[in-house]
Length: 214
Image (cartoon, rainbow, N blue to C red; front, top):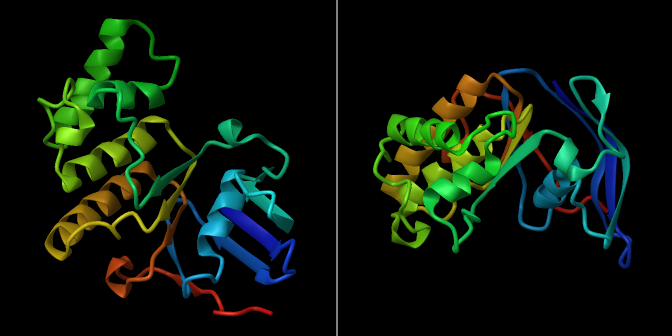
């Protein structure tokens, strides 16, 4: 379970309160959608959960993952994955190398690691893409590789920061359905940030942030 308890986030210089006294619990296998206008603090909240909050902001409250307090734990030890609207693939690496970056260290041996990556690429219809330059992929293919990279890291919770915003309408629906299928299979708590009501999974909980807290 991913839990936020009494979270308040303030911009230090302006003293604007972006998030005020937010408490939220996301159960295993649950996808909760977070909505709000631009500037309401959605992405700032995700940065704080991830452990990457800018020094321009200060936060109060606690974040728990499976009853473990994460506040003072470094970002690389929190076991929280994130998928952005930009795919953030490493341009100087092949598709396979991008995925190998996320593959857990306990999978040892170059041949074994490559086989593991080729297997998941095959499962999502990208079986011939191991050596491909990410720049040669379509938008939908790049999105699938980004999701695979997040999944291969074996996160215990996942944050989705408007992951479909850069896709055209037809491709958006296709990729969205595929992403939701993948994250449900992980059986972990998922927090989705979006502006688009079409992105909200059916029969899922929605939390709306106020446009101006202060």
